[in-house]
Image 1 (cartoon, rainbow, N blue to C red):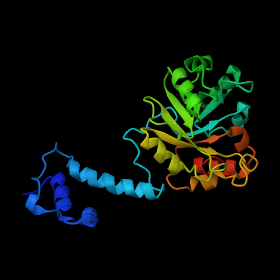
Image 2 (image 1 turned 45 degrees about the vertical axis):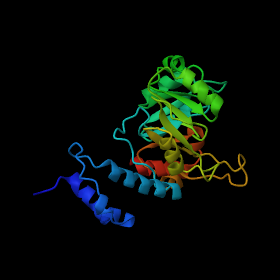
Image 3 (image 1 turned 90 degrees about the horizontal axis):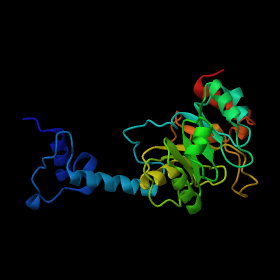
Image 4 (image 1 turned 45 degrees about the horizontal axis):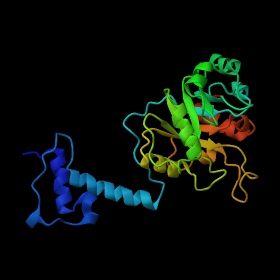
Length: 277
């Protein structure tokens, strides 16, 4: 008689074999009967053991991050680029980025003509606000596919939630002030290792998922942060970011295109990654 897969898992757990060896043999005198969950599932007790094991690993090192969600689809998927004040600089990098987020607020905001030029060049266009306010209005004004709100503190988070009456939407964030991830928002984490050595892609993805984010993608700080945050601030190359634990080379963004274009090696690294000459 062949036991279902979940009963073999239960048996290994009771015996303390294989992946459960470190937990030891269970007390058979008071053992529970084999569970009868729906086909293809495993006992709750077994899942609890797995969760405890992985939680310990994640707590000790951020090189282990929770598994990605079942769905990896997002309007912010692929390789993206934020622009700060001159969005047309990325027109010279056709084929390197899948989407461009143009700034929709402040004196340095992009124009609708900028957004149209990027679309004509083949980029998907989103809008982002450093001080969230307009949301759907900004998205509509630029003909944008998605809305991105900056959230680097409680005030911006509250403003983002108030402005974000639209879809698709994402928070570009350092995560640490968010207690519970808001429903309906994707996560673009500020993996600005150039300014903060602790803000690694894996560390921020772990923090975002711990708070409930279901889709997470890092944004790499590609500008030189030497003057921004001495003595730890520095320039981190794209090659260095791509070699960091937990990075998916097919899913990230950079801040910002104006700085990225100033570093030939970064552009060359992305050309190699995309197979573009």
